[in-house]
Length: 462
Image (cartoon, rainbow, N blue to C red):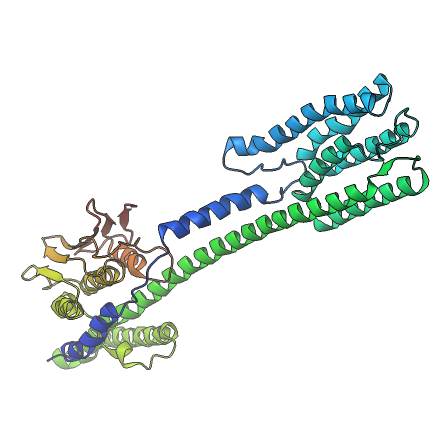
């Protein structure tokens, strides 16, 4: 019995156990995904614009959402202009010309608040101060609200909402303090007799609205940052999974390449004894071949030590499995309670290149591991056939007894990633995807005569 055959019995149990011991984890439910999607959409709406002059809700997915700030502000402007003019004329006794000018000056700048709220705030505050000074000489100002009439307070609060959703906390605090300072100066030094001072009222309402909208905007920004970090983490996790799988394949291929290099070394070293009377140049050539082969084996072992990390585990020393071990693998899966049927063509493993032999076994192993994880209890059929030029591996499972979970979503599983890399190694093709009845299929074609190292992959999404 060869060294490879003696060690195969040792490696059977760990390989089967690795397939059976895959973690049975469930993905989040559809309701959870829907709530997360709703929170993501809200965070996009509440997120502060990234560039100066960018409108509120500019990155909303729907057109009506992007137009919503303009519509809301436009409604307030159209409503406040006539109301302001009527109140100034009828309740305060202000002249019609001044009333019209103030109505326009105090409300029209609100349209600018969607894109440039700080500039709009400066214009509105200046117009409100001018209005308060003009109302000091109005005929019926006594008994009314001053320095901020009711319609001025409404327009100012609309402006505060736009500011809170757009600007930084520092800017909001400055606006709030400036509002209180202007109201305090007007009420403390210029207040007419018999009026109701509304400076403190606007100061409190503006502060409350700025706080609420500022917090909402901060939550939107925080959720956006969390989403960006999750995207970065997912990309890094996918890249790490790919690199780990490639390192694993490299470790396994060591046994395949080392076997052939050892044969070359032995043949080159024994050539002078097997072929007596060899000329000296020929003998030197065989010695050079043997030395080169030994040096290559040494380099491979040093590289393998780096890939394995420590290289001390018994499982790392065991030879890699092949298609002749598929029966043992399936029996271990069946003992674990998973109904699996195996159809292995006679002579399918004879004369197969080691890389194809190993890749076929690993593809079946990873496919069954995914069935155990994502479709527990589903009936599974494994078929391995061979023709003159390729090996066909087909794993098909039906729907799970419980809810079927999406294959290879988040997480650190190596299933489909490992299959793609192994198929790429042999130059074959891989076809994976869901079935109409809720099951899943994995089909791989592995050419026996090698390829260019590229693989054609076809994955259907459910």
